[in-house]
Amino acid sequence: MVRKTFALALVAGTLLVSACNTVSGAGKDVSSAGKAVSNTAEKSK
Image (cartoon, rainbow, N blue to C red; front, top):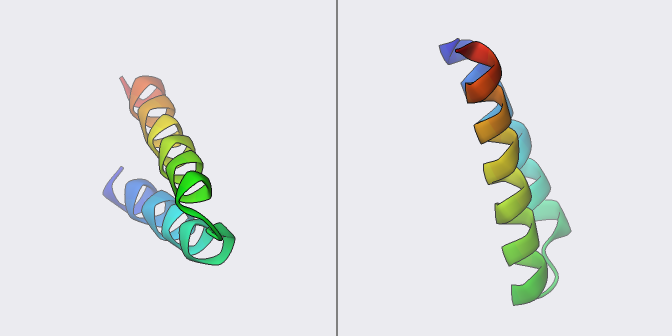
């Protein structure tokens, strides 16, 4: 579980750094990463 969460955070961080050209883009990336983490948490229940 911890390993999966860490991998997801690493991927999200990489996407955030590589895809953010504007503040609006950063907000979308953070939102997308948050949804992915939430979905993973829900599946792990």
